Length: 155
Ligand SMILES: [Fe+2]
Image 1 (cartoon, rainbow, N blue to C red):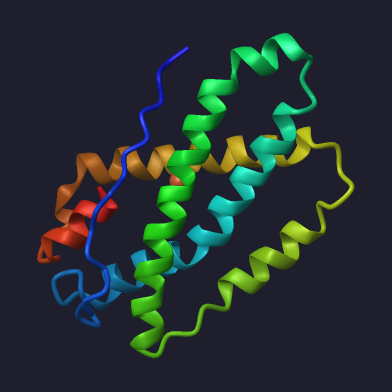
Image 2 (image 1 turned 135 degrees about the vertical axis):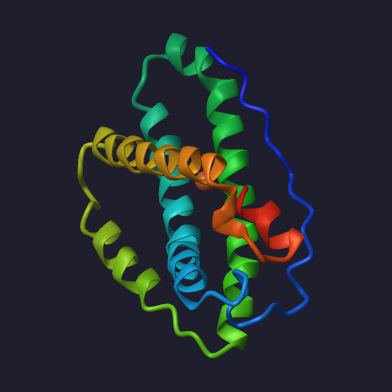
């Protein structure tokens, strides 16, 4: 079992950033904007899934995983908050987040499913997140020309 340390990110996202914030590159900016738009609804889904999933376990493993679950929820809540702030800036720029409604409709269809099902979806999506994260760390040039606060957020 690994210790999950919740990293509280203190990034100022109240100040606007450039429309093409990723070094003036429209594609890179749009790619990360679209990812960010999916995050708050996704992170909330992960939190809800894990919270409901752990309750299906017998008391002993529930106890055993309690710290990890708490760490995971804290970490996801931090991501959700940061990306909501980032997305707020995107809204100010005139972007409309259609993603979140589509994702929310898909999530609503899972109501009544075995709670392990959303946990499995969470694990699968987090696997993609890990692939993306590894790629990002190997390719810091993805953030070339971005303000330090934004490259910090994405790192
Ligand atoms: Fe996350």
